[in-house]
Length: 312
Image (cartoon, rainbow, N blue to C red; front, side, top):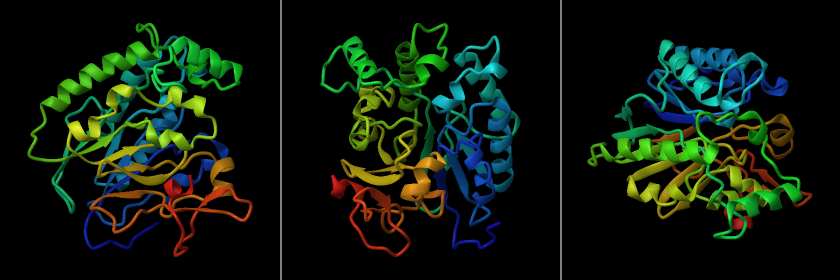
């Protein structure tokens, strides 16, 4: 347990804990606040089972002053425990579970962070993807998906997400975009925002994916200017399992995932696991260097090195 209180509260974030995976089962023991007033953003992919998602968030809600959750694709997967449900009804159920334990969701009013680095609206969003991040700009969706299948790149979402009553994930995404822009338009423009979504708002972060076709399941072109349009101070996301800090149009983007043991055992992982969102850290919290084999890895504490963007 971390008991050392910092000089003031911080807004922190983490994602892709995948606590249902045996190798990540103990990660919850590492997630403690540094200050009694710390808030924690959990940016999706906690687990697949509703019970595990609820129990994990309930534990975090007991430790942090406030916890905010947005769903990832894994929360939407339909398994044996979800018999008779669609992904849309499962999401509605998760929202109710979160409300019962005091965890904020994308369906709740956006809270105003007034601690160090504030004030700023913390905007929890659930936007999905619409297959518009095609390998060739403007390429028809069906052509891009066919090419991905030929190269054996197909997200499990295609088999495990049931978007009914929507025709597909893209239709559900359009519905979420309309609802979210309506709410964002009503925010007091006197304050900047912290935009939180499991999937990145920009395509640029997907350029470092090992399999470029996977970008089809990572976001939508419709959010490409949201960090500017909605006065973002920071954009928080996960999903890619490539924890990093990058800057686009002067806005800091934080990918805050943990990922699977097979990933972080080799390349390392952020320390501490929760990333400081506000106040602004003095320097990027995750740096990447090339290991002895030439494969990028996360730099160790105090180790100098270029950022991942510099390595491309």
